Structures are given as structure tokens and as C-alpha cells.
Length: 461
Ligand code: SF4
Image (cartoon, rainbow, N blue to C red; front, side, top):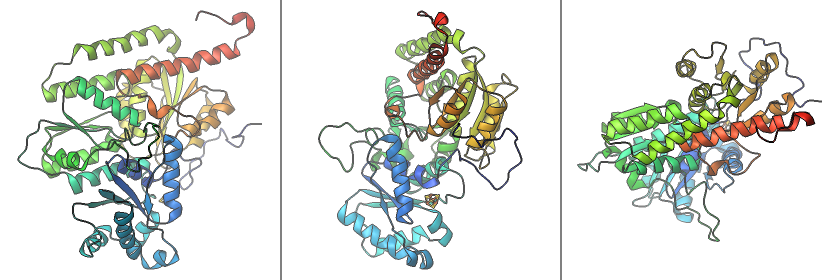
């Protein structure tokens, strides 16, 4: 008996029904972004249940404790609004937990009530609840719009709106907005910038926050995160590289508007060509030479792609997850000579399909692309039942389809709830490309080893 035995191959038009959504709620993304500020306590303005869910969603993926506060709405707040709760929260949080900054995001309930967060924060400041030198920022995250990616984008834009400043300084730094990627990806992006000898402000930065070492000390506010000084200085940087238009463009545009910092909106640098475009944009904007060590790193990825080509050729792939990841992954899969045939993201946005098609360059005429609230795991399963694929790349929820249809799967994206370690190994950059190739090949050949009859099992493949 299969787990998803009710999935039908008969695809009917649906308008008001999502089955097994390929996304989660806005505040989860806002909370993840806020954790990328040093000494920040994210605050969920809504009920305890929402906050518990946001924290547990992040903890289950990153395998790290997630500190966050909540306005703890009860029936009274639901009827009369959450002002009193937020005022008390701000006072208590600074008294008891002493963060440098509180990053407030809203929830479905407080959005429906219509709580005016800037007005409440201003009242808290007037009442003396915000100590000298401490800050409260906010973003609106109604979860009936968009997805966790929208929430991430909104909070990063909030950082710019509240914190970025222009001064007389010309520090020669470059901003990198990494999008929603793993802490290891953020670390890898910083490494790439430092290999090119460039001073960088990466924001937000969850490395050393969501992948802290186990060293016997408990740090309520871990070592990592973009500092407030750095966030303020983003307005003085020479340029911004925004990676992934869905997660990072809004903040980059806001920074251009507020502080006149020019922005390059790029794909997430996943795979060979997207990484090439990132490195080349940095090279031309900063006016530098790409160091030989990076060129050799690239060459190793090209060599690996060439060595593995024989196994990848013609393999049909289904991709599901967040739009920035899928745009880059679809291009990389096609560059590996695979056929990304089904591409599904729960995050809405008209630009998605256009961008994927642009990256596929008419190489996959049979591709089916869907995004938004009706683009769910059920639809993906229906497509797979109609015509199977050789590989699924996506989050943990794909495992049911993978198991039912006996299709190998690579875990990538958010959330990954049933494995440990993914947050420690980057998939961005040339090194990340090599890791992806290795994982894909392992998935194909393990299946072959497992299912080949005895006489067909090969030692050398
Ligand atoms: S009620 Fe809204 S904000 Fe709260 S967990 Fe559900 S979707 Fe997220």
C-alpha cells in the first residue's frame, strides 16, 4: 500500500484548494532573517501557537535552538488588538533578555486585526521601554499572502528601511544579500568574496548562529550575525549584490532608493553558470582580477561535470522548492545534460516561469512549470504519475512521492526535517556545485546497485 494512494492521474482545474503545500508561512522566513542579525531577538506579534510553529520549523531544519519571543495573544488581544501585549513584550524583553535589537514580525491574526506596529513601537519608546542605543525594527508578514520566502524578503527589507544609513564614509565595502540559504552557504559566499580580497557586508548572516559549535558554553546570542554597525554601514557600500530576485531584490532596491547604493540582481550562485555570473558581476563592479585559485576551483567543477556526464545524460528530474533555488537548479540540471521536466514552487510570482524558461534556453521543450498556491506536492505527484522522472530534488516532503514511486531523491531547500548535516555543507559556488553533482550521482548509482540483478552488479561503474 502506498502512502499517497489517493493521488489521481486525472488533473482537474483547482482554484481554492491546495493539497500538501510546497511552501510554509511568511513569519518563518522573517524569523530566519532576523536571526541573521547579531544579538537580535526575533519577536512574533501574534499567538503563542504561531511562534511555537515558526521556532520549531527552524529548529527541526537547522538542529539548533531558536530563541524568539511572542506577544502571546489571547482572546482579549484577538478582539481589542495587540498593542498592550506588544508594549509589555518590548519592556520585558529588554529587561530580561537584553538584546541589542528586537525584530518584530506580524502574523495572520495581528494583520487581520490591523495592528499598527510603528505606532506601538513609538509608544514603547515614549514610555521608556526601549533603552538608549537599543532598537526595534519590524516588517509585516501576513501569511495569507506569499510564502516563507516573502517573509524573509520583507524582514531583510525592514533591515534596510530601519538601519541603513548614508554618511560621508567611503569604506569601499560591497553588500551581499544572500537570500534564504543555509548558514554554510552564507559562509561560502563570504569566503568567495574574501578570496577576491573584497571587504564585504553580508546581510543577513546566519553562519555561526544557526550552525554554532558544541563547545560546552551556552550562548543565548551566538557569535555570528551581521552587526548593527555593519547594517548601518550598508548605505555607504559601493554596490550590492542581491542573490535571488525573490528573496533579495526588494531589499537591494530599497537600499538603492534610500542610500543610492547601486544593485546587481543576480541568480543564486548555484551551479556553474550562475556562479560564473556572480563572480563576473563582482569582477566587473569591483574592477578586480579573478584570482587563479578561484579559476582552478571552477575548473575542478567543470572536470567533475565532464566525468559524470555519462551518468547524467537524459535523466528526467523533478524540482520542487523555493523560486530562487529552482531557477538556478533548473539551469544547472540542464547544464549537466539532465532534463528538468517538472518545476514546482508554492511561492507566487509571475516572474518565476519566465525566469526558469530563460535559464533553460529552450533546451527542455517538454518542461512543466507551476508556482503559487495551486502549485503543490499533489500536482507534482500527479505529473510524476502521468510520466515518471529519474530523480526528485526538493525538501523532506518529497520523500512520500519518492517512496511511493521508487524514485531517488536529493534533499535540498527548506525544510529538511528527516536528515542532519545539510546546513553544514554549501551548495552555492563552485564547491557547492561539486557537492550537488556528487549527491546526484550517488542517488542514481545507489539505486542501480540496489536494483541490479546479481549478474549485472558492477564493481567499476
Ligand atoms: S496562523 Fe498564520 S502566521 Fe500563524 S502559523 Fe498559521 S499561517 Fe503562520
